Image (cartoon, rainbow, N blue to C red):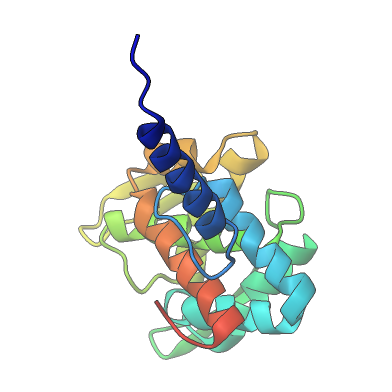
Length: 198
């Protein structure tokens, strides 16, 4: 049987550089496991500081939350496992709602995924600027009224997570593509680490 030492060498070189690239924090593979990407934001919090990571997440979800204050409240409450107060202006009147997340305390990477999936589930229902009630339903579960006036039942991202479901399963149940969510999470990590976006 003939041997091909040059092929073995080529494979070794490929494996070496693949391992090298995977070990560099700023270089992220598109097919990286979700949990590995999630852990990056928690590592960022330890290295760059919690406030910087919380601010980055809040900035990325300000439009979804309706205001910087709401976005900050969501990030803080989900991280600490405490009650969250959201304020929405409806018919020129401020409406405030307080709710307790159904999940336990979340790390920053998991907060990013949870908010992105909640946003995606509402977007599938045609809601891109949700009220506080709709955000709560997307996170904890509940019925909302769609743009066509029909009732839409949401299982709740946090409720599914608390039941032990993985992010891929939750995204599939919501009909949300997890790929772009992870890419956005990776971009947030890149911005925290280098100050630049991908």
